Amino acid sequence: MNKRSLLVWSMVALLGMGAMVAISGAQSSPSMSSSSPAVQGAGSQPSDPPKEFAGPCHHRHSLEAIYKKLGITDEQKLKIRALRIGFLDRTRKTRMDLRTIKDEKKTMLLSGKIDQQKLAQMDDQVVKLVSDLLRERLKLRRDRLALMSPEQLGLIADWRAEKAFRSKWRRMHRWAMHRPEESAGQGHHRPSLQAIMEKLGITDQQKAKIRALYVGFQDRTRETRMGLRSLRDEKKTMLLSGKIDEQKLAQMDDQVVKLVSDVLRERLKLRRDRLALMTPKQIERIADWRAEKAFHLKWKRMHRFGGWRGHFVG
Image 1 (cartoon, helix red, strand yellow):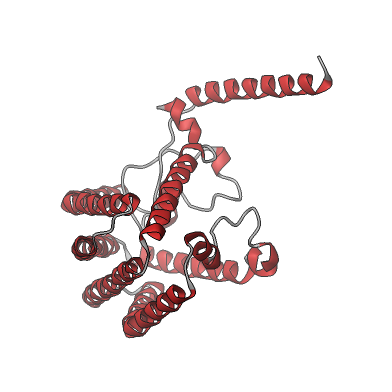
Image 2 (tube, helix red, strand yellow; image 1 turned 45 degrees about the vertical axis):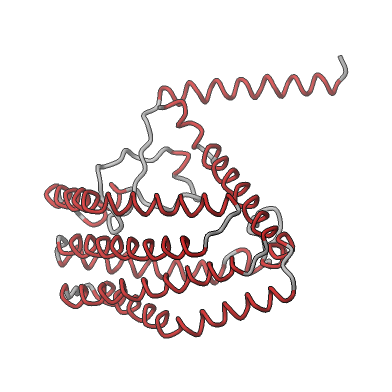
């Protein structure tokens, strides 16, 4: 047996031993549960995150850590959980209908046969469902804030200020900004617009029409987008101040729902208009591309770091 064969068999044996150790460790460790921030959602209290996810690359706090940081009492936890349950009950049909329509649209695109009239009808339904869901979600956030004491609102304000500072710092010092020539390397998986157009065989005439569609979208939605940005900044400022005006917050949320619906309606129309410019052959290429993208996405979900251990935990 030559040296190369011996090396290969040694690597196989080593990998097999590592898999056996991982399986035994997964079977003996408690099951992992996902968590979400208290200001975004509340449910049952999760167990502590595994040590391998507590390193420098894992920045999301556990729900228990957030509760502890804000000093949430047991009574508040029960009320927050009840609010979350009520939200899920009220929005279940809306969420399932939205998922069904998105799946139907995805299937239409994968088939390569676009029915513009049916697509427009589905987009109208999507806008309505998204608006209903957003309205309930914003109400859930207001109801949660109403449960907080003034001291807890002050802690949330400090936390949001710190989060905003860190976010701005990361945007200023992100790796790709310092080394732009390497941003398209192995770690950069999103294809450029030029690569997409080359892959689909977009002609110069189509490029000009697509650009005109986008310019029209920007012009039509500029006032709406700026109004939405202004409302979000006003809400953020109110939260940072630690003084919540429930009535004013509800009014701003109603305006947010309307503006988001208007922008979404125009964005979906832009997508339909772009598809209408494609030739049947280009539609088929888009279908193949979406099918490949869906396969890779599912593969990554199954094999992401640490995720494969869930198959042994159950």
